[in-house]
Length: 448
Ligand code: SF4
Ligand code: SF4
Image (tube, rainbow, N blue to C red; front, side, top):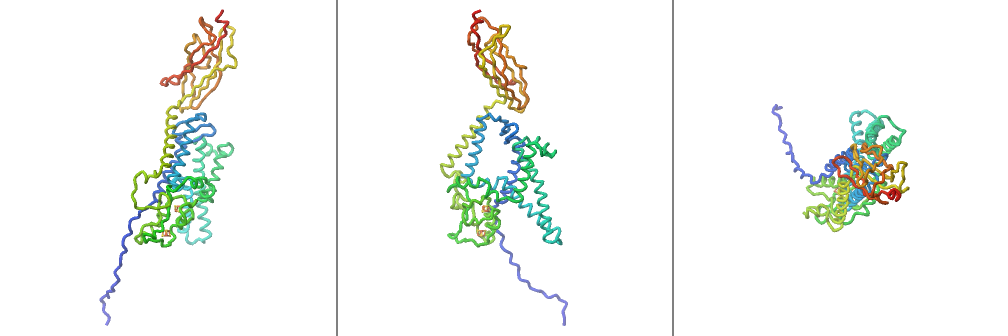
């Protein structure tokens, strides 16, 4: 006889897996945040004149200063500082710049992400489409996004060499005639092809930094190193995840010195993620030189990369150029005045008896504000410097270089060669500049 009482089925008790140990390395997440910061810096540098080389106007903008091409000392220190910054970064931290800060890497990875996103989105939204149609649609979306982004990136990149507002006006007028417009269009096309077709291949074929790194790094540089762990009984389980995540398509287990490796650390995260599921720690690490030493606490300076005298020396040289740059910038005068006698003719005698010496005057307003420069003569009685205007008013970045007459009526006691001084003062607050000169006169007037 059938009973209505439900039969109790005894189910096996679900065994909950032990929780995963916390992930120890999160380089991918850190790297994406650094990418975002670097992207914002890449955009900000030309717009705030932090670093920009204006080719049409022949100006170098650095840290907000508008430097003229003839300001050799500052440009020398700035270039040497940047050069040693790259060298020091390569010697101490290997290819960290490539993985974490290089615009080529940032946008190549971004391009790959957009391509994947477009494929997944089209497949999810249009499941009935044929595979071929989905692939064409995904590519169209990807290229559309890439096209718009290429225009923006090309605009930012060209702004490093052409004034950004001027360039924007050309962009809105679809200027394909002037040099700036043609440059912008060419850079857009190159950017599009780069991020559509080349991407990370650029790092291993065209970019010289990878080759330079091979020369600069040594046994104390930061590397990504695989440690087989045999001594600690934690061998590789051959899951291959470290190879699958590598954007450069290499196997870090073969060598830490592969030129393709950009030290991004994604394989470190991958290995850590796999092995922690079976209660082990990863086999790939950032390490100073080839010998990984995870877990061992070292002094702070060694952990920051100062591991031998060579590294201290290169940081000292870097500091030297940095200090030189700071001093050169602090001594910089926003208004440049140069005065020299023009001795093509020693002197001229005018019809009214006045004597003329000619002076070559160069004035350049290197600031972003209008400047007023006043000139006067000391030590030459009744002298007249024949400028079209005195004070001279110059707009931002304006300059002139001309030869002007300095006229004097002979005075009792005048010599053949008379020492005097031209004083130039830019603005009321500025300290006047003094130019000690000589005024040449014929002996005749003095004898008369
Ligand atoms: S081997 Fe590792 S660190 Fe090197 S590029 Fe590939 S994922 Fe990045
Ligand atoms: S991810 Fe780690 S465990 Fe997996 S293959 Fe690479 S090194 Fe071996």
